Image (tube, rainbow, N blue to C red; front, top):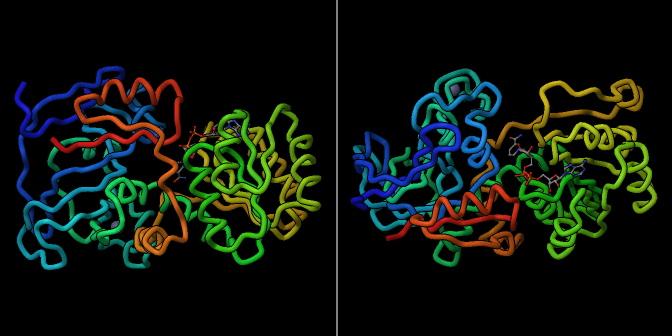
Length: 348
Ligand code: NAD
Ligand code: ZN
């Protein structure tokens, strides 16, 4: 097998292969990138194990990977914002830039979004990849390639905490201590939350959250949402001002509503079953706002500034490291739910 552009291609459910692909030339406004670190996301693993997420179905071979950093190797026509040799973080979703959502600045809602490793769009778990230059963010010298890759999940935390209205003194409840719950914990703390309480059904994940700065942790042992909400309230001394649901588990979403104070806000980040029964009248009569989020919008610059200034430290999130050649091993480990963030280094 040649290895000019070793690439991780998902052919179909359960069929992930490493192959040498052609190296593409950057189109107008694009840069060609030599890939550095790519984090494995739950969605990459899910496409591999299930071949689909909701309506997004892998119908043709697709390159995986979307949490990435790289070095610019070529400039396409008209690119002036970057130069060859710049290290960058790649924001993986490129919208149409023309529709009413894009024009309003809510490009994450663009119906013509091209998002890496969401079928049929290729991702960037490869040696070389081309991307729009205006969705590449130059990394300062003291920000590492791994931190650059972690801007992707961190941006989800930035967007969720912004939509939740987390501010100085907020008491925040985060449901689920996976990578996404953890970036919300880091962001909420950086935004000045006074107390952050985190739940999970997995004790080791909670210990990890504690090591990252969670003030309180609660192991969920009951499927009764009121039971868990009462535990959260007892520890905080009151209901939470803001709850950020990052598990997608129906019982946890119910807990989120019961544990949030009147006039508070629940942000739904976790995506589980399409239809979930909720105590909606309880939320309505207590004016608990329920908001969704979809990825992030205009969050990369904020996430980068948070890391560059030292306001958040995402480095401890990386628990395992592999080379691109070891992609299958890395995905096996991710499937088993081991560790927190698994990084794949794509340098030859
Ligand atoms: P993950 O599976 O690693 O983490 C989920 C965590 O929730 C796990 O630690 C799990 O043990 C815990 N959990 C399960 N049931 C629970 C319960 N009843 N109460 C409390 N905790 C419980 O996933 P992740 O990568 O951290 O992502 C979290 C969720 O966010 C996923 O549903 C993912 O699809 C979603 N997500 C949404 C967006 C968006 O744009 N809305 C973006 C990224 C991820
Ligand atoms: Zn658009």
